[in-house]
Image (cartoon, rainbow over all chains, first blue to last red; front, side, top):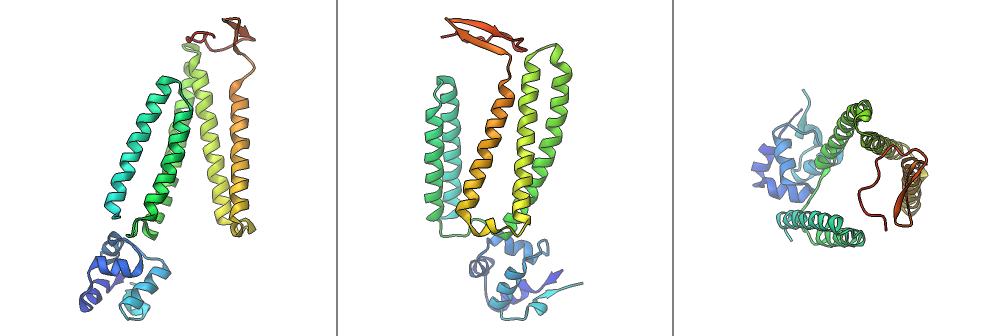
Length: 63
Length: 182
């Protein structure tokens, strides 16, 4: 599963630490998410999509 | 408090606790470790409450769950081998049988605990809504397991301290205790 977290984070000038704080996870989790090494829970996916102001299905791309 | 500082304090508490345990065993004092464990748990709880950063998240819980499952499986298999080796070698040293029994009961207890907790988390039990009742039942089950273990491990045959001398009770598999009988 790919995602557009890194791209959208840059668009909103958000650091990994900043995004992590907003969604209540550790920075390392954002790092692993961006690298596609971790599949988030539905709740975390929804929270990230909300912060990055994008529908969840556009943020995460299933291949 | 930062997460980094909290982790430092956690390591320090673990080191101090380890040192207290070692000293207490040597000094034959068993009150000190109990007091220090309770104190350190309370201290850790207070320190954790002061941390503003996120210490654990869903990824840590997922990894923790997998790590626990692997650890239990690997530990159980390793202990099974160790128990068999110790039982085979019991003729050379009677102490091996006792060690093997202790290991066997501890592995069984661990597996029972794991199965009970797994069942509890898996089911839609009404217990989940009542935390006090859950903790109470967990303590009762824990106590029952400890009592059964003590009963099974104590055995009928052993050495009894009588009038300053060690006296055989039945046919003890262990040699006479080395410490003086008071």
